[in-house]
Image (cartoon, rainbow over all chains, first blue to last red; front, side, top):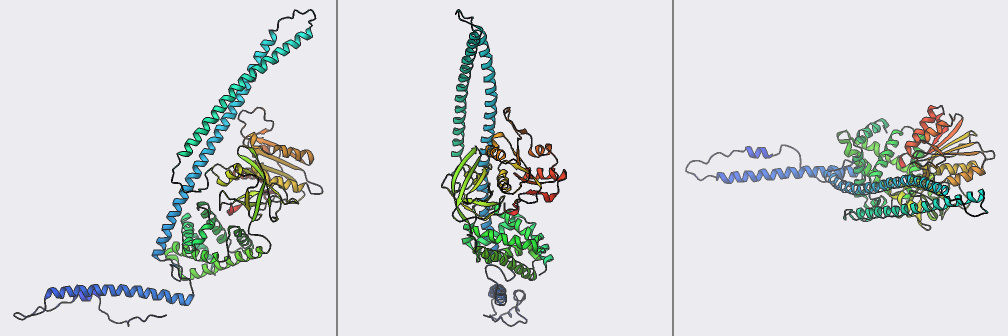
Length: 223
Length: 372
């Protein structure tokens, strides 16, 4: 499909119309009204501006179609050399902005998740380290108490008592005391640990419910 | 086709970095809206991957020996994303529009024609490889979880069975997708040499903030469905006959364990020294299994180490960063070294061994390149 363009040659330009001067009307005779001439001149100028704009865009369109015919290039917002036109670039930029917003949301959610996990890891390391230290001190304490208890076993009044029996009784006292102390400490420690874990769970729930409510559904990265 | 001109033009465009990929994908989704569903919500990682692949392609445009296998792999690999031949046209148009836009006044119709021809070759190579692959393999493998075991609070192992056999070599990896994180594929190594029943083991460690690794560690159950991509990766057994040094950081153990199983099938296995390192003792999640293996296989000896012991006086292994521990035990010249773990750990260990005189071609590391 071809569009025929007007023949080229000297053409009236808006500037030429602007520079046109009408001689003044002769005295005593009715001449043309100068205001009307001015108004007409402005209209002609406007008209020509519009015409030359339309012509430029038509010529552009023709060139694009001609290229398309010649090269068979696809026509989707770009010319045959793939240079995108302004409106297409604008559409791309709007979509790009939307994508960046989505990326930001996902990134924030992932960062938040990462911090939670790191906190959990740190809390766990602290608890384990503390538990180890506690266990060591409980054992030491139990050993000290039990040794005292063993040393304090009174000499038996029984006639059949022997050195061997004495030793066994001391050993028995040691073990009893040792296990008592361990049990007491262990129970106290486990209770403290359970309280710790509950507190931690509460904190996690509280922080999760304070997440912004407008996060898109089905975001990856959330636990 | 003037490849120097293409390289020069690409270098010019690539200076805009992430913006270029952002423009490309936005143009593509305007052109082919149905393609959007093939990608995850967040596109940041995807853009890095695209730029990485483009840089690799353009830099190797003159060395077809390496470029063609790369493109063929890329074409096969894209089948699991649901890519079909028609998508390639839209991608080509978006690529050229993006290049034109960022080239500004440098863009000429000659450049446009050269890029168009270059892209046609790239697309053809990828499409052909994908088509040939269709005759042999499904686009992805549907798999079901058989067992899932939480080994530490942040580490799990699981076993899957696939509906169709998935061919692989010990030490290779597959990309995994889980329904809970659609369109997110991450590579995991099989932790066993191929078995007759086709089941495969994986080791997963929760990456802080990592959506898929968290889901695989915490929420996978027997019966969960996964999709697996084709096996990739070059960390496989080099049958050189040399003795072997293996260095595993945490779940980097998986491919090395698979290679161990392959070594066990050799007529006269070489001596293997495996170093297994983790931050803390419970990061050594697979020690019982490894100790069983070393009891059974006299050629295998195992050293384990932690870098942080948190006052654990009962831990009976070595202490220190794994490259230091390995270096304490010898120079390892004359060995084949296999290293897998975090990139920092792999790099530090490889550098340490190289500076101790181990030739580079005897140091085998996992390299996921652009795809990771």
